[in-house]
Image (tube, rainbow, N blue to C red):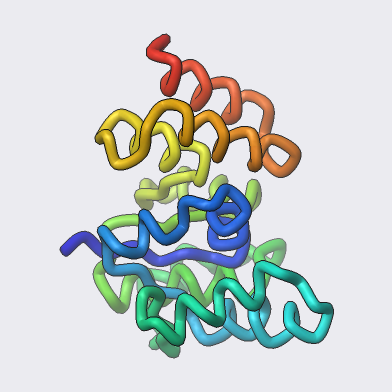
Length: 169
Protein backbone atom coordinates (compact mmCIF):
# COMPACT_ATOMS: atom_id res chain seq x y z
CA UNK A 1 0.00 0.00 0.00
CA UNK A 2 1.26 3.49 -0.82
CA UNK A 3 2.54 5.40 2.17
CA UNK A 4 2.41 9.14 2.84
CA UNK A 5 3.58 11.35 5.70
CA UNK A 6 1.60 14.50 6.46
CA UNK A 7 2.67 17.68 8.19
CA UNK A 8 0.25 19.84 10.20
CA UNK A 9 -0.58 22.17 7.33
CA UNK A 10 -1.39 19.41 4.87
CA UNK A 11 -3.41 17.47 7.44
CA UNK A 12 -5.50 20.43 8.58
CA UNK A 13 -6.27 21.48 5.01
CA UNK A 14 -7.37 17.97 4.07
CA UNK A 15 -9.65 17.94 7.13
CA UNK A 16 -11.09 21.34 6.14
CA UNK A 17 -11.72 20.09 2.59
CA UNK A 18 -13.66 17.09 3.97
CA UNK A 19 -11.76 14.52 1.84
CA UNK A 20 -9.27 13.34 4.47
CA UNK A 21 -11.09 10.04 5.07
CA UNK A 22 -10.99 9.25 1.34
CA UNK A 23 -7.20 9.58 1.53
CA UNK A 24 -6.80 7.64 4.77
CA UNK A 25 -8.97 4.72 3.62
CA UNK A 26 -6.94 4.29 0.40
CA UNK A 27 -3.40 4.90 1.60
CA UNK A 28 -1.25 4.28 4.64
CA UNK A 29 -0.82 7.71 6.22
CA UNK A 30 1.37 8.79 9.10
CA UNK A 31 2.07 11.88 11.17
CA UNK A 32 4.88 12.43 13.62
CA UNK A 33 4.23 12.62 17.35
CA UNK A 34 5.14 16.31 17.15
CA UNK A 35 2.53 16.95 14.44
CA UNK A 36 -0.03 15.15 16.63
CA UNK A 37 0.94 17.37 19.56
CA UNK A 38 0.65 20.50 17.42
CA UNK A 39 -2.66 19.62 15.75
CA UNK A 40 -4.51 17.62 18.40
CA UNK A 41 -3.14 18.36 21.85
CA UNK A 42 -2.69 22.09 21.37
CA UNK A 43 -5.70 22.33 19.03
CA UNK A 44 -8.10 20.77 21.52
CA UNK A 45 -7.04 23.29 24.17
CA UNK A 46 -8.07 26.00 21.71
CA UNK A 47 -11.24 24.03 20.85
CA UNK A 48 -10.33 23.77 17.14
CA UNK A 49 -12.79 21.45 15.42
CA UNK A 50 -9.97 20.05 13.26
CA UNK A 51 -8.20 18.78 16.38
CA UNK A 52 -11.15 16.63 17.42
CA UNK A 53 -11.56 15.30 13.88
CA UNK A 54 -7.88 14.29 13.71
CA UNK A 55 -8.04 12.66 17.15
CA UNK A 56 -11.04 10.58 15.99
CA UNK A 57 -9.12 9.51 12.85
CA UNK A 58 -6.20 8.38 15.01
CA UNK A 59 -8.52 6.48 17.37
CA UNK A 60 -10.07 4.70 14.34
CA UNK A 61 -6.50 3.80 13.31
CA UNK A 62 -7.02 5.48 9.94
CA UNK A 63 -4.17 7.89 10.68
CA UNK A 64 -1.09 6.52 12.40
CA UNK A 65 1.16 8.46 14.78
CA UNK A 66 4.85 7.55 14.91
CA UNK A 67 7.84 8.96 16.73
CA UNK A 68 10.20 10.13 14.01
CA UNK A 69 13.57 8.38 14.12
CA UNK A 70 16.41 10.65 13.08
CA UNK A 71 17.52 10.15 9.52
CA UNK A 72 20.95 11.17 8.25
CA UNK A 73 19.42 12.18 4.92
CA UNK A 74 16.86 14.41 6.67
CA UNK A 75 19.62 15.94 8.82
CA UNK A 76 21.56 16.83 5.67
CA UNK A 77 18.50 18.36 3.99
CA UNK A 78 17.56 20.32 7.12
CA UNK A 79 21.03 21.74 7.80
CA UNK A 80 20.64 25.52 7.95
CA UNK A 81 16.84 25.42 7.55
CA UNK A 82 15.90 27.19 10.79
CA UNK A 83 12.76 28.62 9.14
CA UNK A 84 11.10 25.20 9.36
CA UNK A 85 9.14 24.26 12.44
CA UNK A 86 9.47 21.10 14.49
CA UNK A 87 6.46 19.57 12.72
CA UNK A 88 8.03 19.92 9.28
CA UNK A 89 11.40 18.68 10.51
CA UNK A 90 9.95 15.56 12.12
CA UNK A 91 7.76 14.97 9.07
CA UNK A 92 10.90 14.83 6.94
CA UNK A 93 12.65 12.47 9.37
CA UNK A 94 9.55 10.25 9.37
CA UNK A 95 9.36 10.35 5.56
CA UNK A 96 12.90 8.95 5.28
CA UNK A 97 12.68 6.48 8.18
CA UNK A 98 9.42 4.98 6.83
CA UNK A 99 10.60 5.15 3.20
CA UNK A 100 7.31 6.82 2.32
CA UNK A 101 6.36 7.72 -1.25
CA UNK A 102 5.68 11.41 -0.59
CA UNK A 103 4.95 14.04 1.98
CA UNK A 104 1.66 15.89 2.01
CA UNK A 105 2.06 19.56 2.85
CA UNK A 106 1.07 23.04 1.83
CA UNK A 107 3.65 24.89 3.93
CA UNK A 108 5.45 27.26 1.55
CA UNK A 109 8.89 27.11 3.25
CA UNK A 110 8.73 23.31 3.60
CA UNK A 111 7.66 22.83 -0.03
CA UNK A 112 10.60 24.96 -1.14
CA UNK A 113 13.02 22.70 0.78
CA UNK A 114 11.36 19.57 -0.61
CA UNK A 115 11.50 20.92 -4.17
CA UNK A 116 15.18 21.95 -3.84
CA UNK A 117 16.05 18.42 -2.69
CA UNK A 118 13.86 16.48 -5.16
CA UNK A 119 11.77 15.02 -2.35
CA UNK A 120 8.30 14.01 -3.57
CA UNK A 121 5.34 15.92 -2.19
CA UNK A 122 1.68 16.46 -2.89
CA UNK A 123 -0.36 19.51 -1.97
CA UNK A 124 -3.96 19.19 -0.72
CA UNK A 125 -5.59 20.92 -3.71
CA UNK A 126 -3.76 18.50 -6.02
CA UNK A 127 -5.08 15.52 -4.04
CA UNK A 128 -8.64 16.73 -4.59
CA UNK A 129 -8.05 17.06 -8.34
CA UNK A 130 -6.42 13.61 -8.50
CA UNK A 131 -9.33 12.04 -6.60
CA UNK A 132 -11.76 13.45 -9.16
CA UNK A 133 -9.61 12.13 -12.01
CA UNK A 134 -9.40 8.71 -10.30
CA UNK A 135 -13.20 8.80 -9.77
CA UNK A 136 -12.77 8.46 -6.01
CA UNK A 137 -15.06 11.48 -5.73
CA UNK A 138 -17.29 13.12 -8.28
CA UNK A 139 -16.63 16.44 -9.97
CA UNK A 140 -19.26 18.20 -7.85
CA UNK A 141 -17.79 16.91 -4.58
CA UNK A 142 -14.31 17.81 -5.83
CA UNK A 143 -15.30 21.40 -6.56
CA UNK A 144 -17.12 21.65 -3.22
CA UNK A 145 -14.04 20.32 -1.37
CA UNK A 146 -11.74 22.65 -3.30
CA UNK A 147 -13.97 25.63 -2.48
CA UNK A 148 -13.73 24.75 1.22
CA UNK A 149 -9.96 25.13 0.83
CA UNK A 150 -10.03 28.33 -1.20
CA UNK A 151 -9.44 30.73 1.74
CA UNK A 152 -6.43 28.70 2.91
CA UNK A 153 -4.47 27.92 -0.25
CA UNK A 154 -2.34 29.67 -2.83
CA UNK A 155 -4.51 31.18 -5.59
CA UNK A 156 -2.47 29.59 -8.41
CA UNK A 157 -2.75 26.12 -6.81
CA UNK A 158 -6.49 26.60 -6.32
CA UNK A 159 -6.99 27.65 -9.95
CA UNK A 160 -4.84 24.80 -11.29
CA UNK A 161 -6.84 22.25 -9.31
CA UNK A 162 -10.13 23.84 -10.41
CA UNK A 163 -9.07 23.63 -14.07
CA UNK A 164 -8.04 19.99 -13.62
CA UNK A 165 -11.38 19.12 -11.97
CA UNK A 166 -13.37 20.90 -14.65
CA UNK A 167 -11.44 19.03 -17.33
CA UNK A 168 -9.18 21.86 -18.47
CA UNK A 169 -5.86 20.12 -17.73
